[in-house]
Length: 188
Image (cartoon, rainbow, N blue to C red; front, side, top):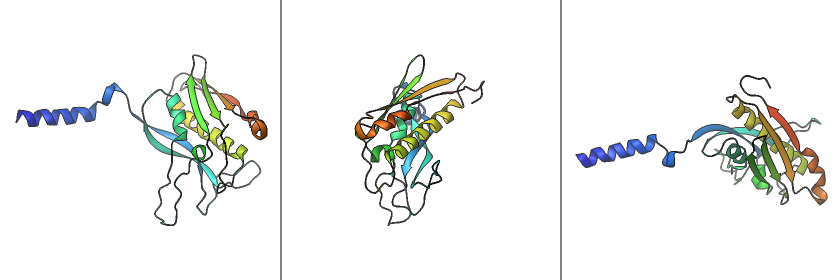
């Protein structure tokens, strides 16, 4: 009986307390997804063109440093579930499909995000330009941080740097950006 009681307590205790004392949070993460293999278009560009891509959110259970790990989760593999056996797309996240890396580091002054496009290659089945892909990534990062920032009291300064913008990709460096998201007491 003591053994059974000890087992029940151990199982219940392990489900209440995460391993190592870490906190697991369920958060919304926005991802830039390719809609290739589907029959629909997603986002509309500034020129009114429909893209076969979209920035969508999904819930994720994350642990680690926030907001750094939250930003890096934008690059999580994404297999879009389907009830159609003809939809056979093993990956939809544009960061992964196009070989783009993403990292974030918090300093005392700002959140520095690096988007490394040095290995950027657009797959043949993805009907997008490099500029469109990077813009979708920027939108996904900003939306993810906006949702995160809604519950924060301090403002968040963000600097996004495009690394590896050389040769034919040099003009993508123009997409470097900085913005500030206000805390609860401020307005956006």
